[in-house]
Each structure stands twice: as C-alpha cells, then as structure tokens.
Length: 277
Image 1: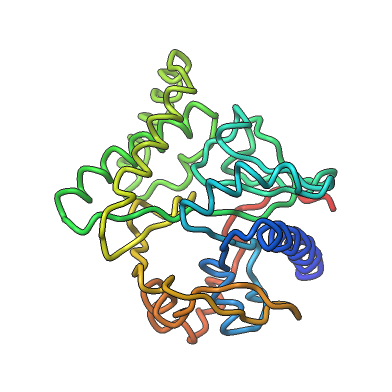
Image 2 (image 1 turned 180 degrees about the horizontal axis):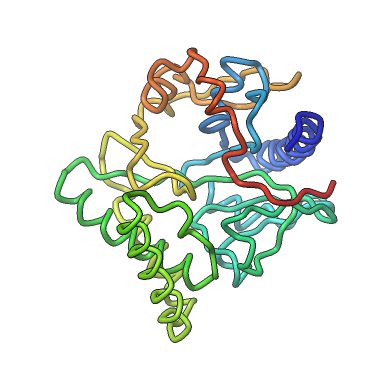
C-alpha cells in the first residue's frame, strides 16, 4: 500500500474511532487506545506513520456492555461485527466497519465474512497467575481458536513458523482440520471458545490479556494496575481515553517503546490485498 493510500485508510479509521469514542461517552463505557495505537499516541501523537490499523480495547465488562448497547446508537454509516452476528467471522474480538468501503486481509480473503475498512475492538480478560492454569487454558484457547478459524475458512497456513518440512506438515494438518470442521456445529464452538476466554474473570490475578487475532495466548501479559485510572492523550488532533499508567502498559508489551524499529519492519502487517474508500 503506498503512503498516500495508507494515510487515507488511517483517516477513515480515525473517523470510525471517533464514532466509537462518541458511543462510549454516550453510554458511559470505559475504553482505551490499545497496542500500536496507544504507542502511536505516546510516541507520535497519532498513528505510527506506517501502521495500517487502529486498535481500541475495553475491559470485559465494558466490552459486553458495548456489544449489547452500541448497535442501537451507532451511526448508520457503521456496523459492529462479532463472531456472534457474522457466521463467517472467526475472531473473539469485534470490529467496527464503515459501510460501503472495502478492505480485504489475506487471512480472511476466502472466509465470506463482511469486509470494509475497520477498527479492532479487543476485550481484555484475566490471565491466571499460576503457570499450570496458564498452560491448561492456553492449550484449550489455541485449539479452539484454530478450530474456529478453520470453520470460517481463514487462511492461516502462511503464518506457520518452522523449517520447510515442519511448515508443510502444519499446513497439511490445517487442511485436514478445515475439512473436519465442516461437520462441527459453529454455535457450539463459539460458545465454548467464549467460555474459555472468560474462564478466570472475577479472580484476583495480577495480569490481563487481550483477545487478539495476531498474538498467541498470553503473549502480552498486561499488569492490571495499568487500568486503575484513566487519562486522556492526544491522537490525531483529538483526545482519546488511555490507561492511566500508559508507560507501564507500553513497557510490559514493547519494552524500549520509544525506540523506532528498523525500516525493514515498517510494513503492511495485515497483508492487505484490496482497499476501496
């Protein structure tokens, strides 16, 4: 994606983000800039120049309220997409998309899920403190996530790591899983996956984790203390709510977060194939 088109996509994402902000403020729902978008707010006061998405997150209770109440007040130009209302969408987080636009990611190219320029909405759940509990939940979480991706026709084989023989074996196993999923009830799979995501909510663990499409289970363990308070930070000329301790959050995820990555890593991370504004 060339720089001019990327900037147009970012500005459309900003428009969607402002709508989510409006809805959250109307409904008195806490939200916060997340991941690279929070990093952009702190380091660039806006989008990271080469970033191709916008991320907003909520603690699980706020996320549930948003899913329940936002559709009634969301502007008519936008729609809320979840694994509950789109049978071809396979992620445990939501997207708010702008109607009459198009943005196709390689991973979902053949899924049949509704497309359109979007921002991601991530729910944060409790990550258990115990190593045994994390190992057990992580095993079930990864298995169910992959099953749902296969059920929805997501193309994830290109993302497998390892040597050529190992990668080929993983791709073959995913093809077989995709075939097996034709005989599996999707609604049951979604319910089970959602239950596993929430399993430790209500416990006193020190850490939270986001339900995300690109990160493995627990890959980012975010201290709960980040969210003891909220602050407002400038982002593209307006203020968005952010974790009260954004420095703790960003150090937990990115470590030396003010250091720019090498130019070779400033890329289209989402493998965007097609855009129509």
